[in-house]
Image 1: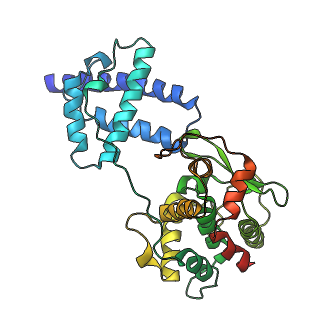
Image 2 (image 1 turned 90 degrees about the horizontal axis):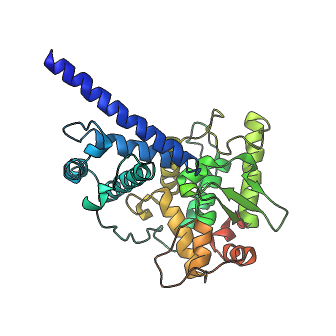
Image 3 (image 1 turned 120 degrees about the vertical axis):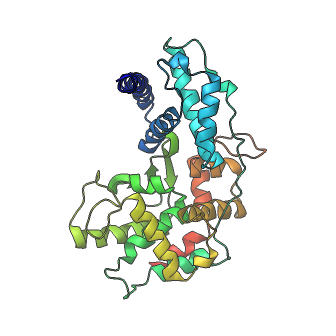
Length: 326
């Protein structure tokens, strides 16, 4: 009976803390972060809280010692980047609690945070690999059950010639691409709730037009607010489906051995950034085009005009193959 009472009390304690977590997430939502960011906050807070023993009755009971032990358990089978993200989530949570007057101080300064590891870019290997990939995938592959090269090329082109992340691709809408001829652009819902506008070259614009035409044949006209990328049934493309699509493109083009391990779609984004740098774009141009919060370079932040960004995109060699596909 005593054990049952203890379980009930522990459940009530965790519930009270999770109510504060919900308040924190609601406060964060006002900043308009991405859905993935909010989900990561909630997941990190719940997972670490479940490892705190004994279960705290109040946020003030979350001492540095208890949190250090919980984070040690959390880190046992996770990558440093995952642990660092969880630390940041808890640091933000306690900052919120201090601001709201729930606790007197933030104990996270006493909990070690893994050092950030500088990741080197992982572009596709081989000078002509991006061009080979686009040309091969643009061909109808009769081995596929329902080939749709127009869509597959669009996914690759948005990553190779506009530097979009996986989450940004999934968030695109039919109306995301707009502008007059010569001034076409794609509006991107960037990471961390930072939207950006990326100018697109005529080659990429033509790829968008061909895809939308092929989509109309399959499913009829789509509203501007509809998801841009869909599967072969017309349903919005999801994360797993998009990852599989990219792997399939690498395999069909015979370039799987030129993709850095663990990079996949991000290798295309890295290729975009690497070629921009090789073709003369400066650090702030790359920062704007890729939606980075900062660049680990010696250059200071410089405001970049739309004309400069468009010139940097136009100089990107990968765009030439898209023009050739027209």
